[in-house]
Length: 220
Ligand SMILES: O=C([O-])CC(=O)C(=O)O
Ligand SMILES: [Mg+2]
Image (spheres, rainbow, N blue to C red):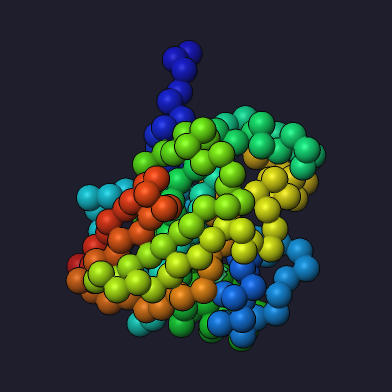
């Protein structure tokens, strides 16, 4: 068997596990309670989109939001991973957007229904190139930013996370075994807002990585 190249993790078809409400300022802006345990949801691998392809607004949504997030790429799988060894399971990072059909999510929330159509549609997970672990020595202290048409909308630091990267790896792996190539989206800081067709999104982790995506309407 040939060795797989972790730098193309998005091609492996592994799961994407997302953490919600992990920044108090974002939980507050959407009038949600500060969680006492991580809030988890999933995106399928078909949510991935890479630079060069557009983010597609779902036809059923009129309020598509951006959420810039630090992604953690798993290098070594495991179940019930202790917090003390959690970082040994990390291969690296990626800058990710958790694209969210906010109007659909609001409807799901009010009806007590799952967020699948709000969060897991095609192109709902734009990702950057893989960032090797060594380039981010402390994932609990890096700055994330996002601009729409050159205007700064989100600017936050992972030091504001309620639950740290090692805590999340340990917590998630108690319920869902982690596999090599899985991606964890660690939540978004405040500043989420709507994007429209033809908007240009630019986001980065300090000067470590930058991504550019265009928003389009699908023609079907
Ligand atoms: O939709 C939400 O507000 C939850 C979420 O994904 C986040 O906080 O990153
Ligand atoms: Mg999110």
